[in-house]
Structure formats: structure tokens, C-alpha cells
Amino acid sequence: MSLALELAQRINTLRYEDLPPEAVHWARVGILDTVGVTLAGSVDPAARIVARALASGTGPSLVFGSRRRVGALDAALINGTASHALDFDDCNNTLGGHPSVPILPALFALADEHGASGRDFITAYVAGFETECKISLGVNFYQYTHGWHPTTTIGIFGTAAACARLLRLNDAQTATALAIAASMAAGIKSNFGTMVKPLHVGQCARNGLFAALLARDSFTANPTAFEHTQGYFEVFNGPGNYDASKILPAWANPLDIVQPGIAIKQYPCCGSTHPAIDAMLDLVRGHDLDPGQVERIDSWTHARRLEHTNRPAPQSTKDAKFSVQYCLARALVDRKVIIEHFEGDSFRDPRVKDVMARVHVAPYTTAQFPADNHFGAEVKITLRGGRTLSAKVDQPLGRTSANPLPAERLKEKFDNCVARIVVPEENVLLIYAAIQDFENLRDVRDLTALIIVERRSRRIAAA
Image (tube, rainbow, N blue to C red; front, side):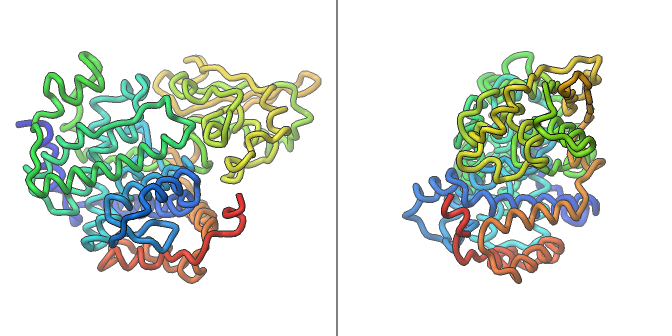
């Protein structure tokens, strides 16, 4: 039996009634966070350009951050791009990327077109989440270190699985959707720090949905698209760089959405910078530091994460999201790292550039952190006069379900994101309440109907 069919059987066996309460809880968390960051990202230039390029279409699916409705495939592409535009969306340790944004924009677009109950939607989301994460066990972290963007090169299987589940495809059709998706997987890390990175996610959401729609209508694909000698494993990883035997035994043991769970971002920048930001803010706030006191900043993060975050001179706001030097300087100058620090010409701020010149980065050693910890960071500040201060973070707050972001911080993040567009205040409260009770929605369209944008906010429209 092919791997695609084995996965399809497991996807279709998953039932809402069998989900542990923790899985439903974390699904609500993922939905809330993704809706928030998608609305905030809808005003980003990357999302607006994609939306303009698809200006001719109309249909039933909502374009988040507007009143416009388009076909499901276009909505998945636009909203998928918006969801990742700020790099503020959730992460997962197994995937080595962002688990929700490949899936949820496609599911919302599909639910707007066909209708879906909250329970069916959650079941599809969990099935897609589990699919992408368990495939990751067989192919990562080789793909991550080799230069692929796992959020999309692996996440597309989560999208296809979730959409197939919501469409109620049978095992053979679901296997075909996965096989089609294998030829649509794409995304390279050389485009990190540009608009192409969020476009990866938009394409992933669209193509995963497209694969499921094609499979529903008897499109054909090679059932051995994963294990074929010129299939997904051999092409993306190559001989000796994957282990497919890890995928099926781990299925739902436990569900990945439960453990290690969803990592909720506190800062709107690359997750690889977050532990260093946490350490820096601990020092800045704990010792009441200002930039004038600081002679030198040394920062150590995992080599795998430093590979794409060692950017001492970012050339754009998108580039700054991947600069650990910029993020550390911002944390010292402003005592926080927020969305506005990655807008307009913020990366040119002379105060921040002055501090960046004092930041020195390096990969940490096994003497600093265990070899299996790639989420830690250490920051040492040398003050003028020679005194040193240091802080270590094993993993950023919210990185796993065992170290969750408090509910009030999650709500605060959601409110801040939604405040970037103009939604009636009463609707914001209703949106939040509906997501907190998502499993009891009779029709997900009751939620999307609440996301009504009156106009762009003046501040953002002028930016």
C-alpha cells in the first residue's frame, strides 16, 4: 500500500468525537491567532499586491480585511499571503515552520463556498496539522537546513489533507490529493526577507485546496508520488536524507497539535530571533538599561537558525524581520518589538543602526546549550566601564503547549492585530466569542460574516 493511501486512511478515520479536549482547545487557539494575524497582514503591501493581481474575480469566499468576495482558490491565495505577511503567525517544533497558515486560509475559503460546521472544520484542521507534522518527522530537519521552506514544501500536504477531509473525499481521492500536492510543493529560503516568503504560503494554501478539488473530480496522479525513485522523498531530500518509516507509527501518538503543540509568537518577526529577543528584554527591563550605557552586545543562537538571521545590515522592513541584530537593537532602544518596527522606513532608524553596529552574533556551543536544543539563546551585554550582564533562554515563551502564552496575552495580541483594520467594535467582541466557542458553530460562514471592514485605518493607509 502506498504511503499516500496509508495517510489517507488515517486522515479519514479521524473523528471529532475522538479528539481529546486539548486538541479542540489548541485548534481554537490556532484559529484565533491565525484570524488575527491574517487581518493584520491584509494591509501589508505583499497581500495588497496579490489581491490587486487577482482583481477580476468574484465569488463566495471572503478576502480578509475587506468586503470583497472571490472564488475559493483566489481567496486562499490572497488570505494565505496575508496570514504570513507579518511573520507573526504560529509555529511548530516538529514541522520546523508555520503549521496553521498553510491550512486555515484554504479551509476558510472552502467553508465560505460550501459551508461547514465548526466541528467539521476543526476535525479537518487537526487532520491537516497532523499530516504535515508527521511527514516532517521523515524529512526534517534536512529540508530546513538544505534551503527548502518547510512551511510550504511540507505544509502543502497539511492543506491538501485538511481540504480533502472537509470535502469528505474517500480514501482513494484523498490519496490522490496528496499525490497531486507532491508536484505542487515549493518554496526556497533564499527568498526569506522578501514578499516571496508570504507568497509561498499563499501558493501553498491555494495549491493544496486545488489538489483536493482536482482529486474530487477524478483527476489522476501517481499513488506512489512519495516513495517513487523520482518522487517527493528522493527529489526533495535525496538518498539517505529521509526516513519514511518514522511517519506512520507516530500518527496521533500524540496529536502534534497537542504535543509539542502550537507555538504562538510574541513578536512579528522570524521565530529564530525570538529567544534572543526574550533574553535581551529580560536584561533591558531587569536592569533598566538604555542604549548609551551599552558598549557591546554578544548574542548566541543555534547555527541552524543563525544561518538565515545573521543580517547585520537589513535593506528593507521584510529583511529586518530576519535580522537578529536589528531585533536585538530594537529591543534595547524601544524595550519592545512590535509590528510598527517593521513598517515603512523603520529599519533605517539611526538610533537602531547605531546599536546594531555594537551587536556581534555567533552560533552557540554544546557548552552553552544541550545539542538537542535549537530554540535557545544567550545574550551578554558589556556596559561602558567593563561590567557585563547576561541572560539565557532555553526556549521562548509560548514555544510549546507545555510553555504556553497566557490567555490574556493571546487576547491582547488578537486585539492589537484586529486594531490595524477598521472592524466595528461590537464585531470584534463577537468574532472573539465565536472562536472561543468555535466547535459549536452551525456554519463557519456565521463567523466570516462578522469580519466586516468599514475602511482602511488612516494610519496604515498613509503608511
